[in-house]
Amino acid sequence: MPDTWFHRLCAGISERLPFGLERLAPPTFIGYLLVSAVCFTADMVILTLLHGTLGLPLPIAVTAGYITAFGLSYLLNRTLNFSSHAAVGPQLAVYVVVVVVNYLVFILGVTSGFTALGIEYQLARVLGGAGEGLYMYAAMRWLVFRGAMIPTGVR
Image 1 (cartoon, helix red, strand yellow):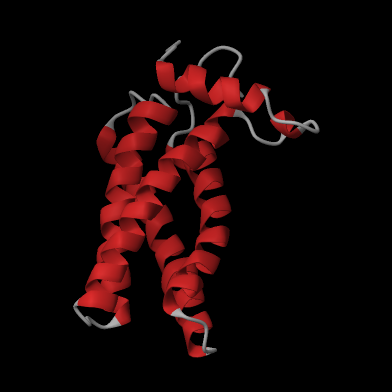
Image 2 (tube, rainbow, N blue to C red):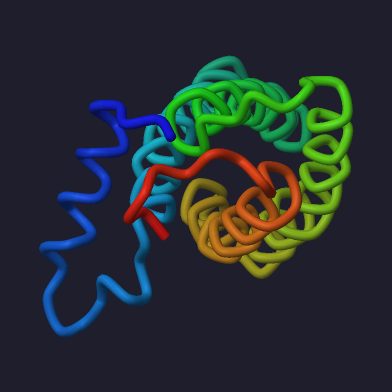
């Protein structure tokens, strides 16, 4: 089983969570949150540059940011968080389906819906990101990277 600095970091954070939260936030969830923070930052920077600075239409800017973030998320979660050594092709195919569903429901649907209600586009994207986060973790943990080698003691 792998025992990397990233797994140790995530297990250390999980073990120190107060109020019994360590049972609800296993190390792979902590790792997912850390990877997602990096990816979401990249997504928001691209969104802001393309839509806020260059004036591209919101759906184009959202799509460009999301495609970049989705690629980075797959790579970082595969290597750092889930330590998967499965064949990339079939795993990536499942990930693409998960991402397409996520994109349609949370990224375009929720972001566009909240924007249509008058909520500022960046806040609308953050609100969509909340539902996206839970969906994507569950899909990666139990669909995309199922059977990945998770270190001993890491749930």
